[in-house]
Image (cartoon, rainbow, N blue to C red; front, side):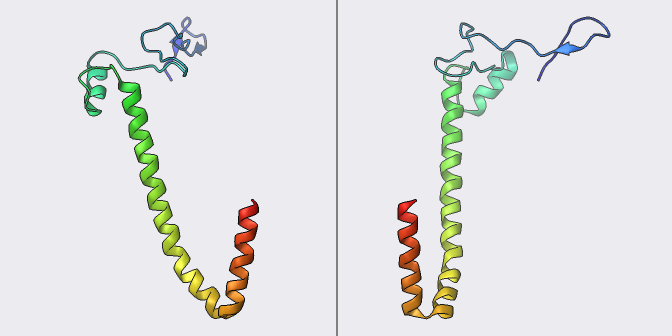
Length: 112
């Protein structure tokens, strides 16, 4: 975080956050501190935008897409990990006992 010197030798304090009335603020959320000038143009261009207009929404969309992609990958890995566990459980307990244990665990999960 950027700091503002008070005087030589004195401690520094962080800058005040932008208020809801600043041009970089969005309604209903914490006011983002958007880059300006060439840095702002470069940042906006990375999101396929010609200007900073709509940048907050574009960043949120990318984050949402990333979260959904990670969730899909995690779900696939969980399914892959389940297969050997299911086979091991069936071998260890036998088919009838394994089916009973699976049913009991599903009932517990449904109540949670």
